[in-house]
Picture 1 (cartoon, protein in one colour):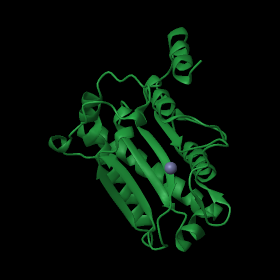
Picture 2 (picture 1 turned 45 degrees about the vertical axis):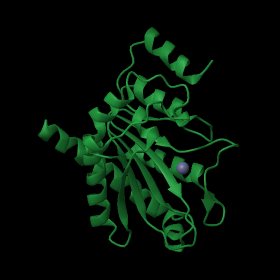
Picture 3 (picture 1 turned 90 degrees about the horizontal axis):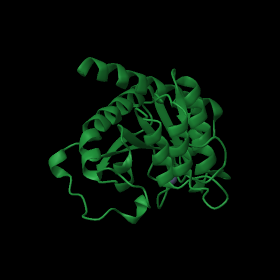
Length: 228
Ligand SMILES: [Zn+2]
C-alpha cells in the first residue's frame, strides 16, 4: 500500500494532532543517497543529521518525514506534510556545483509575486500521483508566507554566520507547489566547496546551523502571529 493511503487511513481512524513543523531531510535509501563530496559525506545522511538536531531544537510537535536511511518519493513527503496539517514545511538538501567556487546556504522558495506565477496547464511528472485540490490555489495561498519565512532564515544566518553566503532563490520550483503550508527548501551547503565541507563535516557547526534554523523558524512564527 502506498504511504499516502496508509497515512490517509490512519488519519481517518485516529484523531491526528496537527504538526507544528514538518522537517524533511532529502533523499535516503540505497538508491538515493543524493549528492556526495567532502570525502565520504552524502546528502541523505547529512540532511538527516541536521533534521534530527533541528527537531530537538524546535519546541512543540515536530515531525520528521524520515527518521532513518529510507527512501520516500517527493509525493510521499508532501503527503506527510499535508495529512499532518504542518505549518510550516522545511525540506533540507545539500548541493554540488561544477568547480569549487559556489558555497553557502541557499533557500529555495516560490516566487512571492503572485502575478509572476505562470503555472503549466498539466502538473509536472515530478509531482507523481499526488492529487492536489488545486495546485494554483495552494501556491497562491502560501507563496507570500513562504517568502517571509525565507527572509527570516536568511537574516538570522547572515547575522550569526557572517562568513557564509546565504542567498534566497526565488523561482517556480514545481515540487514546492504541492505543500499546503508555507514551505522552503534549504540547501545547507555545497559538498563541492572546501569551506562548506569544513563547516558541514564538523559536528559543532551542524549543531550551530540547526540551532540557528530553529531560532529563525520560531521568529518567523512569532512575526506571523503579529502580522495576523
Ligand atoms: Zn537534494
